Image 1 (cartoon, helix red, strand yellow):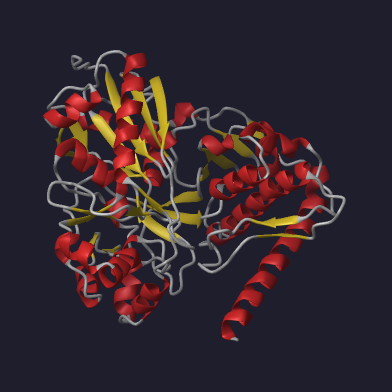
Image 2 (tube, rainbow, N blue to C red):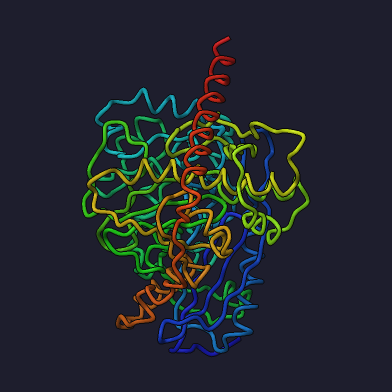
Length: 493
């Protein structure tokens, strides 16, 4: 067991396929980082699940590795995690079944049940309806697995399940809760009227605490497993995107893209303004007030990982393919392997390579995959970045999927704007640690705002590529439209 250090905090980011742990010093700069992975499984088509016990094993391993580099145990622990999932949990925090994750699209019929609710209740959600959100998933569990549903004491978000393992206390925060489709966004509370109208148990929803509030302390059992000190304060934490905003110091008017398993493009909003039929999301930040608008893309790193495994490539080879100049006759890759959110809101959308020919080789396919994901990001950005909203032209990049220079150049070309990369690949983990620093009352400083992690270099669009990119994006959009028509026509028959 280690002694508590008043000079460091720990941030734990529970991602979709790995947990990232970062230790920050008193100046807000990283002392150490560690990562441990786990599997995402697909029990059936359109499903995505993960074993929470594997999350815990990975967390234990990553914390031990991080502490072996960072020295004394931290003074506080902050959390962030993948959003939208559902972990049905017993009274003592045990997971009753595998967690259902955000890429899951099984709850299509439950989205239809939402649409039958009064318009006034739906308007308070202020978000598009999608099957990969906690509300429809929970409704699916109540219908299809009533035994598990009736046995549950809590329906938790992933990072909230992890915190319950640390503290024994069930809670959530507004940044995660506002992304469940069970939240009254203007009133800033659980939407109890909607929950009851859906026939769900309101008692499954945990109490809400501020992201930077103390949600409990480390139990003796958790401390022994992690090699930490029992009684260490644990912060409520935030959803990974909200934590990432904090971790990179995003300010009003800026737009940021986080590239991981999915892609999130965000910009801050100072008011919760409803749209009649929203195609982008509006969630709470990790601050005590404030909102952010989000364009969510399911087919980011998940699609690229599928392509590289299919073609037997490693990540460096995939990214290196972007150094090869694009050609008009290259195939167009549609990355929507698990449906898509922004801007299509179509869980049935699927992927394809369009225009394959005998002259295309492995490198061509790898490059087209990167280009297709970039085109999907451009379509989502257009839906978010409406004219006159005051958003700056430069795109800030964060996440582990933004480190390769050739890939950043391809993104800049497709987005048609400069991109500025982050020097840190763990914005959400940094944000989680910064929430722990706030709990301790550490005053803001250059290293604790998140802004010091940026400015790793600006990449500007290549003007010579503009015409080629425009034509290939037109073909991408036409291919998506054709595929959506074909699927819909098949369903109607």
